[in-house]
Image 1: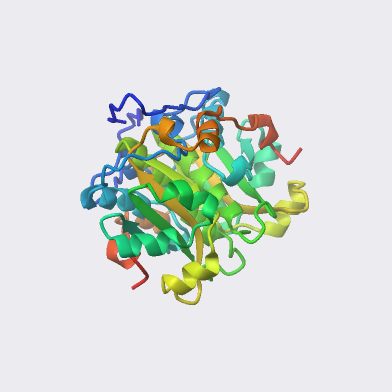
Image 2: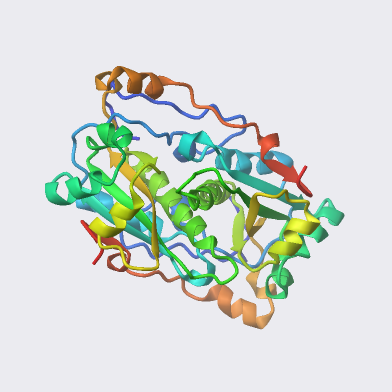
Length: 199
Length: 199
């Protein structure tokens, strides 16, 4: 949250009950600056992911990343994205593919994806602390990811994250700029929180 | 983190790179005090979950909770747990069943579980801020949860969380006490973070 660029758009959650700034200040912009993300910062992001909870401490999360300092690796990762994502995500300083290990929890096979999500939740929270923006994408070619990034049998790529310092949203193409400034909205709590049993 | 009970066990992560206290101080104890968790605090926990990211803002997360102030609902939720969990989790002030909506993302069906995990990640981070302990459990009877808690077709219960203020670990049965004081460990980053492609 140390970014002082006056062109940076801030969109804190319009929370109805108090929540910590690290949670309310996270959102998913498409505008990134070209400031590099250094290795120490990347290590802190993955360290946050590392300390997430998992059943029997199996830690089924995995990450493949590329920075723009390594153009060949960065292009290979960017190339798995759908065009609607790559058009802006290619300007992020870092791309991270998240990968879940299958088969860890007999009878509870979906827990592995859930735990990957918790690890990424820690990562994006730590990113806010470090002044970084993150934007997660489901729109990518899974088969191409598996083939081009050499992902072994038994592992599922789930999302790609664009990570970088916030940029100037006024430089985005007009259609993206409109989405960038749109209000953040969520369902009311009574639509997804139930006391006692489902209602 | 405002709990001043001297019997409370603290187990901050032995992080190798800097991470925020809200992440490093989260762990999964089994000892809970009998101090109730009030409604305003619960609202903040679910509010944190509410502002997680999701593809197309679908927010596929759902929660069923029960507090010990409502014994009938609490017992019904506790009864879905395996015995190894209910023996200690029944002393928590709150139990929360997490439930993912299926079928939101064609071709990326696992994203719903991942996003539920991110929402819970926010919840457990907010819990640390509020001085609460959380312990997630995969060990419960899914079919019983669906039947007894009236969960509709198309939704998957994934975990149960025990939530409450930290208790005195010296009151736990001996086998649990040993696990409670055991060192927290994680894989090294180079086992799950890869640059460029899987190695």
